[in-house]
Length: 321
Image (cartoon, rainbow, N blue to C red; front, top):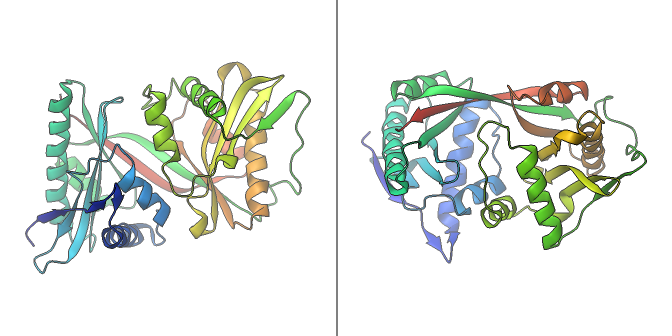
């Protein structure tokens, strides 16, 4: 099969419904071939294709000899971290290995163009894979990419006895706020910046870019952004997401506590309240993603509250300097 491409169609900044349906089909079928049950939802696909960091000129469908869509190449350009994220999906998999290698090469060329446009000698390309997808790992290493980081998707069943029977009470001096106004969102933004400043892949995003990315999902609900304060001082955030509702899951998108407030049980409190919250909504499980080598002890915390790794994701990098 020879590689040909066509761009996705956008109408008034929104992906054409037919192209959105095709992209969703390709992504979900590609994931199901590797991890049985797709890990991405329809809301996730909308977010991926409409967020402003997506390079719409270089994000293309891969088209077979008969004109059918057999894959998707998505490029996400991040000038703040100086990274191009490559998403490469082809069908069927793993039989389409050569096609995926061609698509990856096309994506790396786009990443080099991003580097040149930015005039940066520090630019990197990244791509990820589920650890079961060993064939794609060989494609990535064959293109000169190397493993850089491993992430867990951790999960807990909503019926787990580790989840409290009732909503955990707040200790004296601790409040949890949820508001929908600019002052509140900027407070969450500043806390997120500081809490994750030492994490791998950190970039100091300006507020407009950060808030656009964080609220671009059609499932965004401002009431799901929790800010914990201690004696009136912002201390931690727990940003929930409804993006996995179609899978019957709740999702903790971001959980962070400022260094000076760590060790007081705030993260554990927020997490356990999120579990109860989602159980009361009828979700079958609650999930989150975490850097497997996180230095703040996050993995150990999640294990202590009953969560276990459900999926393992490996990130590969290519230094384009």
